[in-house]
Length: 150
Ligand code: DQA
Picture 1 (tube, rainbow, N blue to C red):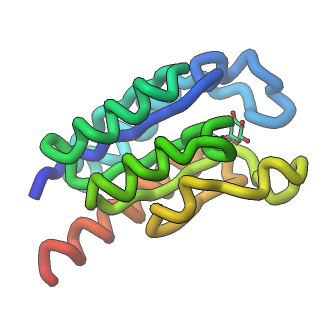
Picture 2: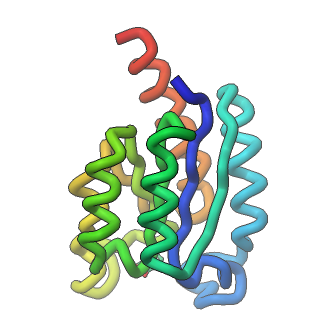
């Protein structure tokens, strides 16, 4: 099984650090990439870290992961709340999926409380800021080691 984890980031996350810092913090996506890679490495995992503002780009990346990755960590950002296409791609990929959000979406506006992604996720980590990506790598390492021994 692949020890590569696809870490996918959706729209506007390229602006992290500058975008609504009171909600999303001051850590840039580049910093999050470094933290995630380091945590992945500590578990013997390789991180394929990507960001796109396009819904179709997210769908294509998920489809590609079927042959290149052992699991997916996804912060689909606003598409979390709208995209059946991303849900269908995640259901089709047959890989463990961990959903991440920097903010606690349940503390925020009503429209953020529903997630299509959650229907395909093994688990959800939200509200821990950038640290959520590190927690997701810890959880993914456990999921992959369980799958290996199963
Ligand atoms: C987000 C939460 C979403 O509701 C929002 O649209 C985002 C970021 C988060 O990481 O907290 O862009 O996914």
